[in-house]
Length: 588
Image (cartoon, rainbow, N blue to C red; front, side, top):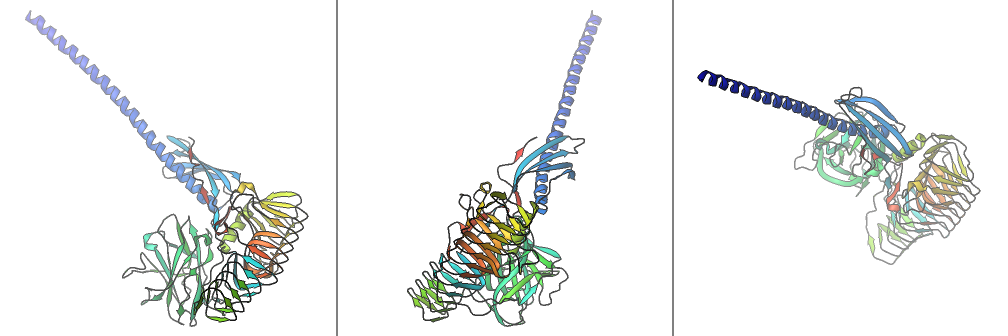
């Protein structure tokens, strides 16, 4: 009896052990199955996140490559980090592209995870500020025979004649046509504001003569979209920049593109500098690794009258400056001949070194005055205004030309009839439009020759551009002394597409006389000739004129319109490709 009970108990224990063991084995098997699934899920989640990050990096890479080469169409299986990505770029319009990036981890051949990202990229519109109805360089302005300017005028040269200006007239101090100091050899670069250590970058120079500094240019390009660059002219303090500011100013970010070019600073004064004494140009910018300026430099240090340095805070109580190996590229200009305003009627305020034989409806600011009727307050002994850079830089024009050339080339001479839509495009020869023909600009057009519009021809802006302007450039490469003229005559009409801000602009890079001629009731919107003279006559009118020299004759009129102070031009300078906000999508 006891033996049977003992066996029964042993059997129960064995059965219980077997049951418990089975349960443990089932739980263990289930646990390891779950653990394996969790590990695989976690591996997939990690790989999926890596693939998405890789795809987004591929978008950044594609945008960079588009900015280096507008013809970039993509790439395949580019290795990056722990995976690969492929890019496909498809054109939607001349200034819009669809970018698709597919990324795989660890490879497209054996992927653990794959992600695809799609964005729309477009060329940023560039804002060009035309602050005045007329802005003129050192050639000055001549107004005669009933000519009028409805708006304000700013001129680096003298204003004379017998016309009428409805707004204010400012004549800046004269500027020498030649540089006093410069260094233009560029074989490398130095960043301004990419790190806190580079918050301030400086170049020293020594004037050759005792004179007042009228202007400076720096050889710059940019990455991203930084704000304006702040400029200080300071004295020397034992071989480094001092904190004694002689003049302050800015270089507008809109004058700087992704390619090198000289950009002019607007200074608040014209400080007197002593010959053979050391002074410093300091450039400061907000710190951003993705939005900063780049200053051209000669690493061989060929400029014997200065050196370069950088600092994290130029205005500290005891600033620390570190040496840069080389000389940064720059130009300085001294004041030149005295400027004046004479003969014309200014209904607003007038500001010039000398005023003579004029009528001023507002206040008058001057050093000397003779035979002028002034309704408002007189301010004798006023220092003339400092020169102002023209609103478009050489680098900006080059960017438009590069965009135009990337759109293909038409052999010239080109003389379309009827209605034609064109751009981006380069015309390798002259462009003629006449007898009622219409040219609609859908992007920048570069004419490697002369532009002639006559006999009821029309120039307009495509509706595809929207509230942005378009540009046509007459720039005869290597022959700007005789070619690159613009002639608009005999009832030519130039207009936008109906959207506010859709201004067409015509540029001539010709030097010397007859760069732009607008006559015989032709109507133009924005005319730009930075190196040559512009003549508007015989009842012709424009909404804005900028030139080295301007002549207004026989009832010519310039009427400034609101919106030009913030005119945008697609496919333009700084025209970096960028992702259009709101177009990011994960498609896989």
